[in-house]
Image 1 (cartoon, one colour):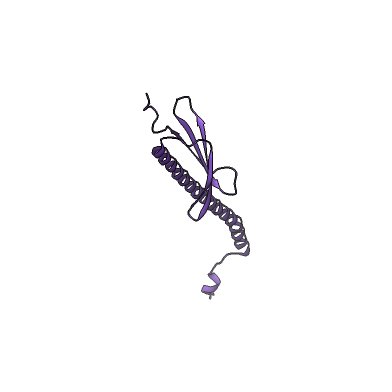
Image 2 (cartoon, rainbow, N blue to C red):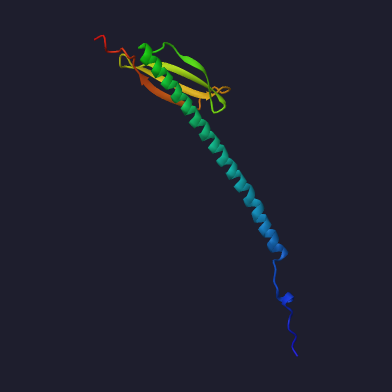
Length: 136
């Protein structure tokens, strides 16, 4: 008479070595995934800051264009100041450079955090006074 094995003795599970190998793979892969996730979050934050800085620069350019349109002159000298956008303080600078074309001025607007020297975003525009060319 042959003995039949019970269903419990036929059940096969993972050996200790297999479990340890699987845990080692997870232990190596999980920190790499977390590192990648943190890099993505840092990149997203940087892009958000650059976008906000570009909005501040666009606002300053619009303000400068309104001043030129109302006064007919481009304000002389470099300008700087602070602006608040999205619950953050931003430092902006406006540098004016001459161009080869008479009456045109190159304007560079740099925007960054208040505590940083290097701007996050720089916008370049060319302006001419509203009354340029009317005296000819």
